[in-house]
Amino acid sequence: SDNSPIDVPSPSSSSMTLTKDELKRIAAYKAVDFVKSNMVLGLGTGSTAKHAVDRIGELLRQGKLENIVGIPTSKKTQEQALSLNIPLSDLDAHPVVDLSIDGADEVDPRLNLVKGRGGSLLREKMIEGASKKFVVIVDESKMVKHIDGSKMALPVEIVPFCWKFTAERLRRVMEGYGCEARIRLGEKGEAFVTDNGNYIVDMYLEKDMGDLNLRVVSDEILRLPGVVEHGMFLDMASTVIIAGELGVKIKNK
Ligand code: ABF
Image (cartoon, rainbow, N blue to C red; front, side, top):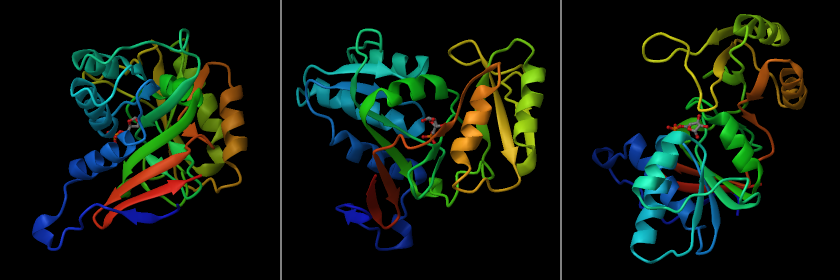
């Protein structure tokens, strides 16, 4: 059911305008409707996915869901899930995941995504790539024509060893798109370290990559030694739930 608006009351006046966080929660709750008892679930990371994990915890506590196994996509989500008493596992014990729910930074009309602003892109890609169904939850501000990294950067996880060398090789791969490659910094101005002990290079592009080039660009980035993974999630989402001022839209692949 493409583009079908569903049962979220539309605000009738501007005084009822929903905040971005309320939109995120609406999308997250809608996604949790897909969760059934006995499922192995990929638990996403970020402010939108957080609402979904909270909701799963609540339904478990109320006995409305049973026998759920959660696979967290970050240490942060692991902590949240533990605090909610959601039983946890990993891909070694559960190589097939029934359903993953996670946010995204950008979503294009073909449901290709940019992820990784939260820094958890590697575990997300492993877990969501092992999922039979991957439901993405966003507010409408995340929808873009092209996932070109121009609105926000395209994140790439790299090993710390000689990161300047790798960042420069990355910049050169993307040179044609007017790329600036910047190492992501943490709160104290030091390099941000991922859950896997790696760094992140954010690639800011001036130009649009265009739809057709995404695969090629993806392969070129992944071929560079020193690169671990990038934040383009091509052809992975099965469903995107978009919460906007006028209601919720569900897009299926
Ligand atoms: C994670 O959280 C990331 O892949 C993505 O970068 C981010 C989205 O965060 P938020 O929901 O807070 O906008 O899913």
